[in-house]
Length: 346
View 1: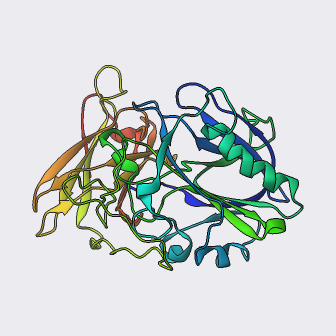
View 2: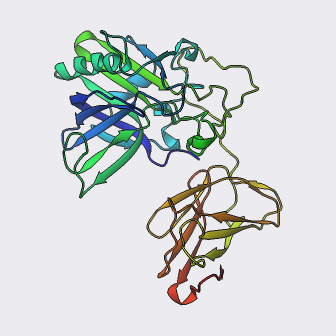
């Protein structure tokens, strides 16, 4: 599965806060001329080893920078049609990944941890009239009723996942996809240069599948040369709408609903279908990623954890999307069809 809201935020840096502790983030307050946003840069891993891999090019040169300057201020969603703006550490020719080194987030001494190295470039951009940050990652918000938890502005909004987003370990594998890596590009016009900061977790691998972005541990390490490449990957094979159908839903299981609600899918096509990257959504837009394979003429039951899709006893809609975000099937049910312990058949 890919990130749901991958894109780029172009804005002027205003303030920053250092990160500490497990899952620490370096926080950057930025302004796009209309609204404030927060860029949350992960600088520490909850999974050992805790140090992130880091590479900074303080004189970055790549065809992508020619396109960034013409972007309007603010957030821009980067869909498949925006390949020339999407980042890919493995295929994009951005830098030599073998030069990434592990770096702690917060240690005594000057210029020797991620907080200080990122801050050095952010402060340079903030001090220049036209200094600009370009953050690649996943957007959140706007959260109309919530102030930002670090800088207090309203509505809360920003961008995170400013790191490689493929080759993840199994726990985070649903976020994998090529051409959706995070990063921080900084334009310093008064010094006539660009700075690029790239980050990855040590638990990630750089040998990834061209379609899914999943780790391929038995394949020799890919080290792309820095070049004029843009992000080009093989498009996954499309699945015809109606190939996989939602045929049942257990909306109101006996006892506590959480962790027991489920949807049953059926493969009506003549071939096995890989559900990697597919998802289900409820009427409120809550999403659960799914995976696995369904053989031709067979079904599979998807059990919800309670953290994504929630099936309302009052009626609702269940939607199935493929790995390109295309709606494949959708069903509706009413409260009259909901019975304790019974599966609704569509």
